[in-house]
Length: 530
Image (cartoon, rainbow, N blue to C red; front, top):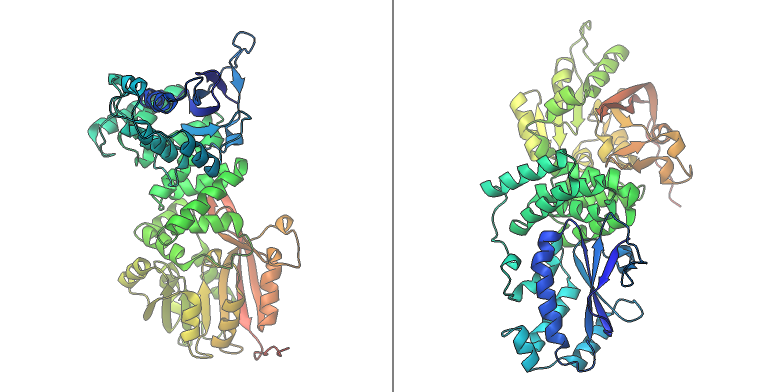
């Protein structure tokens, strides 16, 4: 809720200016210009103002209506205000004016000349320009890099007030801005949240594209219970920098729980405007809305994520996330000891041809090298492949997605298809199993892979894909055991081994998963056509 202070009684329409106690710097610049704007429009209204100003201020304190007859209450969400500050033009019934209604109002009251009264208010800003500015102010068809950027049309208006001067633009690495950020953080750490918010808003006035300030504003707003307004600031972070995985995680895992509609609407907007370049945003949208209708993560998303991780991939996974899947899979193969897999005690030479799909930087390859004859590495990320090439463990390397690679292989040309922590980027495994069944040697062909387990209690309907896999809020796919069992049966595999494991740690907690060893056991049976 918010307190309202009516600035002009009796007006036919009201320009509601939604703001907050932490927007003081922006208000100082904006409100004098709004007053000039409305004075220019109202100059030709003889009996009463056409448009009055209503300041809607978000505060922590309650308003005592008995002591202030003009104090009212208004919910920002009612007027679809998701960002502060913002302007909304409303009629006497409290309804937002439609575009058509505004155009009719403009055509009725717009004047082409400057009146004597208007000259006293602004010598250079006439009535005609005022209507244009008001239209631009209310229309805002673009995504602002800072909340106050929606008020940019007002910047055309000059006001003789020094405190209302617009600060000079600068870069986010400017020493002065760095110092301002440090001071704002100190205020936050000392518990002065509103003061800290105000300082970060000051920074955005000078550098609207500062992602750190937008991120910090979102975090502080959420800390004081204003998640509704925090969403817009965090969405700006990912709009400006799609590679910010932390911001995406906060939106998906935290803000989505409280404000799902705002998060999804924001991601839809980003996807529509920047779909080709903002692949993380597209994937996050699929995570939140696609669930089982999304069959796999977009290849562009996977490639970008792993290109960004290439330099530090192993360190992050192994050292920080306690990732052990490659070791667990190779150890399981050694324990089963299938013919042709040359473990330490074998007296025969290795003769397996292995496809390591989603090979990353080559962890599996280095572990498998002593036990196999020919090793093929496949990854969608060019930078990952280059890191793998430096390791020298593979006989062949391909920058390809899994399905195109398997299609390129000869029938019964492989002994093993191994995928360590790869199916988390692939929802539907039907095509992978079908192709693997064709490309692996009958009776001597194997699949080795891991999955994140889809919890049984999360399976809502066992007759749909939701019983098979789900795109979780983590952005990774989870699969059910029954789905793996069904695919194994359908494509002629026996489950030789399965082990419950922790595939990695997330926020210090183990992520439940399972590793599988499957053996091709029967000639492939083609399904009859209807």
